[in-house]
Length: 569
Image 1 (cartoon, one colour):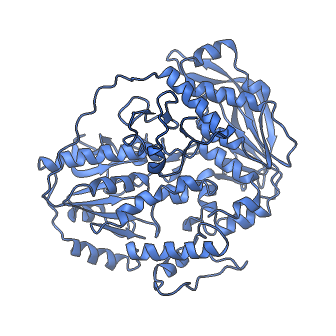
Image 2: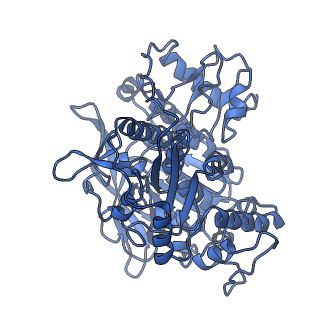
Image 3: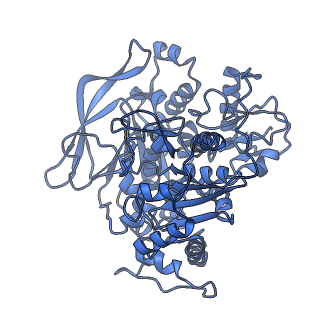
C-alpha cells in the first residue's frame, strides 16, 4: 500500500518539496490549493520512500493498511482520476532576491498560523528582525485556542512555529494589545514594515428572533470556553438539557457536536480546560442536531472531518434519509465536483447507520433556522425545510418549501462563521470584514494606493476561510510582496529604535510576556499535565498565566489561583 495522507492534514505543504517523484498535490502553486480539503499522494506514483512522513508537522501521513487509512486512499485515488498527472502548470515565478545585507525590522501583529509563518519566512532574510505582538499572554492563535482538544496531531504544528521563537532575531511582545498599549503609528515608526495577521475573532450572527436568549450562544464563545481562552474563564454553559442544536455545517460545527457527545474519560486525556472537562462530565446532553441549510454535497465541513466523526465509538452518527438522497439531476451536477460527491456519498451511508448508542449526533440538511424559541431561555428552534435549486450562475441555492418544524432543544450554538474587526489607524472593509489590500499590501481608504510599509496576511487579509496550509501560503505571498518592496527601496526608514519601542511598551504594559516568559508558561502547563498523563493543563485566566510567566526556571511548580471548586484557573 502506498503512503496516504489522513485526517490531520493541515495543508502546510511541507511534504511537497521533499517528495522525490512529485506525487503530492495540489501544490501551493497549482489551481485548487486554496480550496483543497487536504493534500493527496498519487497512489500510482508513490514509491513508498517515506520522505514525506518525517517532514509532516502533524503526523498525517501513514502507510497503515487499516480500513480508516483505506478510506483516505480512496479519496486520493478519486482526486487523481479527475486531476491526472502531469498537471501542466507553468513554473511559478522566482522569489525575490534576498541580499545578504540591509537591515529589515518588521513587526507582526498576531501570533496565529499566518503571523507565525510570516515570521519564519522573514527570518530567512539575513538582515531581518521580527517583533511579534499578541494581546494574549500565549502565542499561536487558533492552533491553541481553536483546534479541538481531541485533535492533538493538528496542534503539533506549533513545533514548527517554535523555530521562529528560537531565533536570536525574534522577539515576543505578548499580552500587548496593538490599539490599546501601542498605536499603529508608534509601531510603524519603529519598523520598516508592519504585517497585520490578527485573524477574525468575531462571530457572525443569524439575525433571527430569540438569538440572544439564555441558552443561545456563538460557537466562538463555546470553543474559546473549552479551549481555556482567558477572556472566557468565567463563561458558563448550561448542559442540563437532553438535546442541543448546532447551527452550521462547517468543521467547527462538527467539532462541537463531537465534543458534546464524547466520552468524558477520553476528553480527560486532552488539553481541554479543566472547567470544561468538569461541565462535560456532568452533562445531560444525549443528542446533538447539526443543522445545514443546503445538502450534504454543499456542506462546508471537509470530508476527512466527516469521516473522523463516524469513527466515534460511544455515539451514533446518522442522517435523515430524505435529506441525503441525491437525485439524478443533482448527481449529474456532482460529476465535476469530486469533493461534493464524496460528501454526498458519505452522508448517504449515514442514513442507515444506527447502533443504539446512548448518545448521538443527527446531521440534518435542507433546514434553515427561522427562530430560536423560548420565553425565559431556549426551548427549541423553528426551522424551514428547503429544497435545492441551481441558479443562473450555476450555484446551488436553498429555497424554502414552505414547510416548517420545531426541534426542541435547551442549548443552541451558532457556528456560521467568524468575522474580522477593525483596528484604529487602519482602513477597514466593513462589508467583507477584512483590511483592504492588494496581494497583501494594505490600501489607503481614500486613494486606494498601497500604504508604504503596511501589510496583511491570513483571515484579516482574505476573510475567514481556509486552514493552516492556506494561511501559510497567504503569509508567504505577503512576505514576498514585502521583500520585493524592500529590494527597491519602497519601505520607510524607522524613526525610532528597538530600545525606544521596548521602553514605550513596558511603560504602557509592564506585564509584557517575552520569549523567556512564554517558555515559563509552557513549562508550567506541561508539568501540570504530565502529572495526569495529559499533554498540558492550560492556565485559563490572565492572573494564572502571568503568575506562571514569572516562575523561576529552577522551581518545578508555581502557586496558582484556585477557584471555588478546587480547580486551578
